[in-house]
Structures are given as structure tokens and as C-alpha cells.
View 1 (cartoon, rainbow, N blue to C red):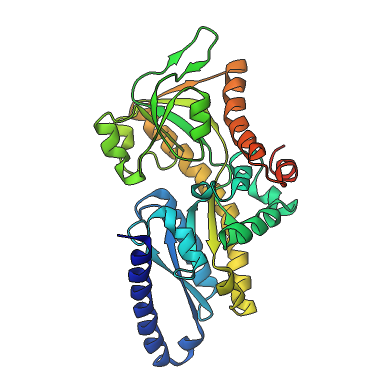
View 2 (view 1 turned 180 degrees about the vertical axis):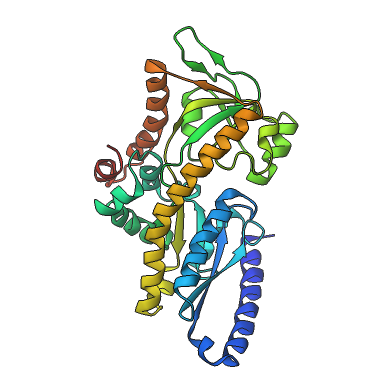
Length: 336
């Protein structure tokens, strides 16, 4: 089905829902003043990431009772992840949560998030997020509300034991790894072969040996039982979060000042709290997968430095090569 057809079908569905909501609101007296916002997530509902996003929604709904409410419409079954931000820009939905790097082709400045080694709190204070917000609105037509799960790092997980050279460096030469835009260049820099596979199909890909490993954070690796196949993890982790909450700018500006304040304040609180929850779930999942038999291969010294330099360097090099006039300014704010 074409994107335009999907959009029309979903928009019709949402318009129907809104009409029903309006009828109910008219019969509920004071409830008619409440603004109802529609949200989608890039990940299936059972995943840790979608479950955590619901904490932001709950926070807004609690703070905004009678003023503003967010309803989560669903995940990829509502809109394909790559089309969700466009749906927000066009006003078909109001809010989206997911990886910003799905849109690197349009917004190379997103690599500032990927290559960041400082907290979201830091880049809020130094103006980095304001700078990036301007880029999001200009190039994607959305308002950047929050950068979530700060401290998130990615790891290479493999089915078979990866080779380690005599000098302690990992050898991924020729290894087929499930990838995504955030670390495709890194994998290529390590001479691995990136394979693009949607999240719901990763289990089948591992089962059928379509690829030999994945790039993924510790948190969430057990959500769909990928750890049934993945027996090795390479440490240290690399990169930072690219998970964001975005909103339709016109929708945001059309809200009351009180509703805007609730959404914005909840976003700042959620950034901090989601980072804390991530650290907790990461520690718990790490212990669980180790107990299940996952062996952690920890690179050290110069080998670890070379590994991380290749990872972070791939992000900043990609941004520099894009010709973005904001390269120097973004690097100064996002990379210490």
C-alpha cells in the first residue's frame, strides 16, 4: 500500500476517533476543555523502550488532568517507523517517540546525538538542544521535545565467539551484523557487513542465520528473546542515545500556555528519570543475560581506545563530511 493511502486510512481512523471523543466531551461538561494529543512509537508495544515512553505519557496525563492528555495509538502497526515523523509533521498524529537516526539522510546534524559523550542535562544547559531543535523544525517540520534515555550505549552481540587478535583488538572482518543507520558506518569501519532488518524480524533472522549478530543496547535485548541465540557481547559500549520525543509545532503552539508548560516540564523530568531507569534496567538485564550464559568480551587499553575511536569517529566524520555549517558548534556542545 502506498504511503499516501496509508496516511489517508490512518487519518480517517483518527478523525473518527476525534469525532467520538468530541461527542463524549460535549456530554461531559468540563471535560470539553481537555486537549487530547495522539502519539505513536517506533517500537512494538512490548519492548522496554515503548513501555518507558508510557511513563512520559502517564506523567503528562497526571499533571495535565482536565487540561491536556496524550493517548498512545500504538507502534509500527499504526505507521511504519520510518514514516512516523512525517505523520507528525503533517499533523496526522501529534507526538512520536523513536530513534532520530532514522532521518539522518535529511538531518545529518542528528549525528551530534550519536557522537555525544555528555548528558542531555548538559546540552540543555549549554544550548545544544536549542540549537538542534531549530534544525529539527527546519528540516523535519517537528518540534524536539526531549532527548531520552541519556547514557544509552550500544554493544555488538554475536552468535559465535568473535576473533580477538594478539594485540587484544576485536576482528569483525566479514561478519554479517544486523545494523541500523546509527552504527552502519562504524560496522563498515570494522569491516563487518551491515544487514538491514526491521526489529520484529530480528528473531527470525537470528534463527535462520541470516546474520551473525546485532548491534543493540543491553536494555531490551531480552524483550524478544534474542539472547536465545546471542552468546557473546563486546564491551565497552559505544555512542549515546538517539531516542527523542517530537511533536507537531503547530499543535504545540495552538495549546494553552498551561498545556505547553505541562508538556515541556514533563519532558525535562522524563529525560532525567528515563536515564535513571535505563541505568537500573541495564544493570538488571546485564546480570540476567550473564546468568543465561552470555559471555562478555571486554576490550582494554589501546584496543578499547581504538574501538571507541572508530565508533565515535564514524559519527563525527559523517557529520563533518555532510558539510553542515553547524559541525563545529555542535561538536563543542555535544562532545567533551
